[in-house]
Image (tube, rainbow, N blue to C red; front, side, top):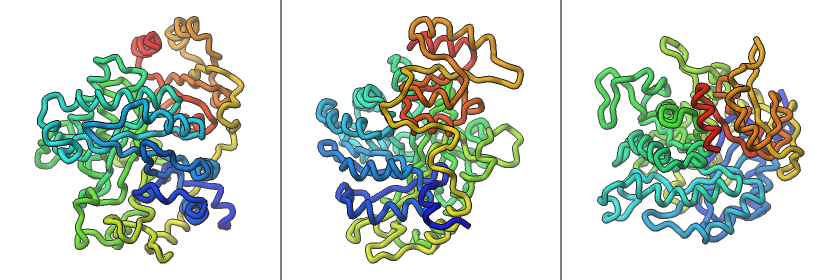
Length: 448
């Protein structure tokens, strides 16, 4: 068994937490308190809150990043009148300069409570939401970061899968491919007190399910496997997968709706280790195919963030906090620390160089797949116009690609796993994936 000094340099792939639901716990003292705990738990991701007009201190963010913990910054900006794009840009520029990669704007736009009454009942809700989201997402992309499409309430007042599908289709009509193919998705992976495999396989497996209608004997997206449904929508509309961040992991439902008698640490803790182990199991890297008896975690899932690391005593969320203000913790904490010691992965891949952002030696790398039988001629054919236009370095090596500022990856998750792309991002690369058949790849490259 490894000691704590070794585990501090490691994390569990895709394991994350939600931090305090406020913006006041970013001092040096807070970092000193929480960083050792996060490291010993094997944390790879941390969801943190930011104000639109004031940045989280650089020292706090750098402390996380240097420890191999990727921050996901959430701006809980209001609908229907978010801050102006220009007012957020200075804060976003600071985050980009400090190495932050993931920014989320808005939360649950498919709920009536996220809008004013007048705004909710107007027509074209999805279009009006995109009118607000896309300019901010464009700014995030222009700074080299990844916009995270806001998590929707599962089900919701506007059915979440219908909202997501409409939004992606509208982005295609608006020709917003620069955003739609570079952004990430997010989802609330509540269990709704159902088995963790509920809905696994998505619409490919449960073809009779429709928005607002789940036939008897079928399973829907209202469960921990919600990513299977969102991934299927992305592939249907965009022709490619998108990274998916799972939020609220471990909860039965929206914490605003849970009452004390329906939530206890014992209920919550009973399946935390089962969820964590599902992300470290070798089957989690496989694709689902009809007839499979083992249903793996969707490979598009980039992070699974548990609710909630810590909370102020007076907060309405204090019942969900793994740690209390007196220094106590739930029984699952030591169990997870032991699990992290046994199952943690290197925070920085040994086979990949790790230059600091801005120190990349190449400007643009076009990463192509290779197969046991060699290189596909049709790949070489479809990239020709793109190569003439941008003159990237062309190759087949993840190690070489990590030396570039911009990496265009040709191939789906079966060729280059999402973990490969995360390695590139941690090396300071801005990464874009292009996949599909030959015609689709050629079309996507031509639009660049």
